Amino acid sequence: MNHHTPLWADGVFDGLRVLVTGGMGGIGRALVSQCESLGMRVVVADLPDSIERHGRSGLRSIPMNAKDAVSVQAAVDHAVRELGGLDACVNLVGYMSPAQPLAQTSLDTWDDVIRGNLDSAFYISRAVLPQLQASARASLVHVASGLGAWARPLYGAYGPAKAGLILMMRELALENAPRVRINAVAPGAVDTAFLRGGTGRSDESAAPRVDPQSYGQVVPLGRIAEPMDVVQPIVFLLSPGAAYMTGQTLHINGGTYMP
Image (cartoon, rainbow, N blue to C red; front, side, top):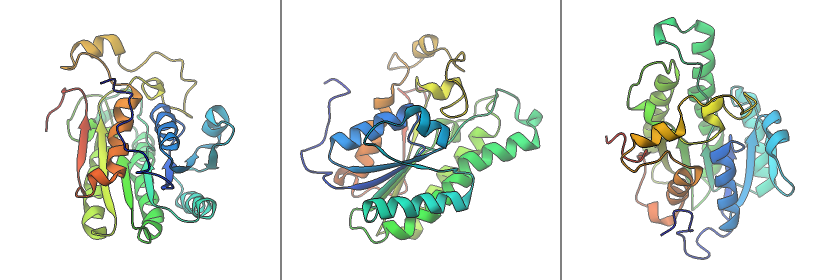
């Protein structure tokens, strides 16, 4: 079966009210399109520059600085007004620092990456959970990284931040069960602008951090991931098919890391 083929029965997601934070990146844009095609009602929150660059007619979008708790709360409140409530949130906010040994990472860089990946996830979780508690279809999905479980050199604060995100997700899952299911996906490398500095943080034309072709040669499944390889597992976690799953991390890496 073509891995772009929708896997979901008609009507399963009709009217599901979803906030996608950091949704203007490569995975986010593919996720939003998939969600809309399945009948979900979607609002995207992201940096103003990202919205200006990648927004489109008919897409509900809200400017948000995920490193600012006040901005996050305002964006969530706006989304709730726009949709009349929330049933789900997918958090894709995050970015890496330039390749550098961890012990040589500046304090400013450490603080920035932790704020942009871990603190932001806390702010988003804290803002959306009271809204999700009111929904009968409540689900929160964080996008972490395989680097949060599999240490690799030269990724600075990014791996520790994503490791913290995974543990935070588990704690939130325990504290908010059974009303809200909270899970994560942990992709390996995906061939998007993220490898070139990140949407909203670069012009997306720089050389990628890893070469997609050579990377694919060492992946058991023989290629680097595409956005839809991550989108479909996220949609699964939003679906009734994942009704008995909470506190789980789905590793999406073509077999390069098997926890």
